Image: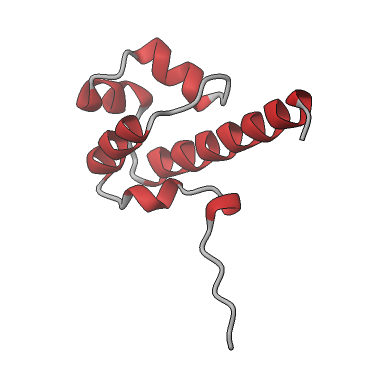
Length: 87
């Protein structure tokens, strides 16, 4: 896989995770400001990450999940979903 393809795949995953986090924030009736305050993630940093231009760390996703009352696995992109193959 070339570096361009790897970058595109990474960007796509970052965008997917950002979308899932954004949806969870809205579903919980919270604001970005509330999540930033609850997690300690600077508001501007959270904003960049929610746009998908910067990736979330696992620690950040755990803090956000805790603040929203959801499992961190709620932010697992489809590319990482467990596939079960019946025997």
